[in-house]
Length: 324
Image (cartoon, rainbow, N blue to C red; front, top):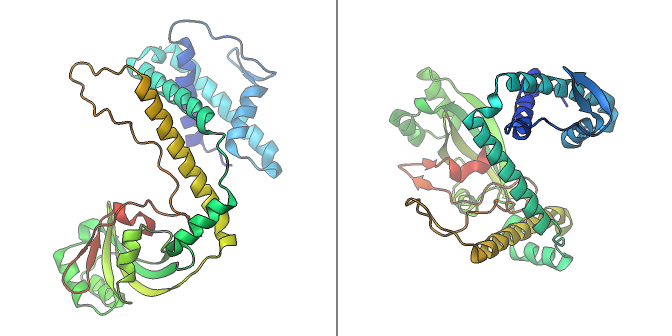
């Protein structure tokens, strides 16, 4: 665990907000429980605070003593910033107060939901086996896509470049065109499986022949990609079981959370003021885990692959998150 100065200052800022929640009404903070480890301008830092930070850091036992010292120094930094913030009455700033209230409501709401759905039973063996058999595309029929790519700045992607891709027989030909036109690029190789990608995108890639080229745009960079190989990569039930269990457990949690929100809405009196509007539809619960495979799966949203002339496909950014 490396507590750089930036991380320490950021963490300190979060504590300033939390502390401000206790002092925004002008009340003096109560004495902190636990054995004191340090005093900063009269304010104690206790063992309980340190242990709480350590529990969130996932510190390894071998480095525990070093981590304890680093965390203690970070807590001192936080207390220094908190003290200065109090002097300047930053805790009274309307934006800070609003941020504190938002953080508080989120923490309380999440704690309630965790209490309600956090004790769900783990998926049973029959449930795991059923999911495995019903989704062969992720397991027994899983495919691996080996791809090569040239990474360029999105601003350099032009109609002339697309035309060059259409007329090129390989990615090396495209690289030659980029060299000729003095366009900077980087080479890379990537491998993804059909369990890593949205089903729609996997289907499109499976339909492409080897050597097929297409473009993926990701903000300020774009990838010119060529399919080098598509080959079988099956997964057995024993290998897939831990990931299926995780996926199904997350799915159960999501469904339970949605059901609880629906229940609360059905018994609550909700009125929209000042033409605020509202659909009456509960906000989406946290997304369930992506379909399991041997790697972290991409969001299962649709891929927007639009065929163009020749061998070019442009696929929108969000639909190909698994290729990042």
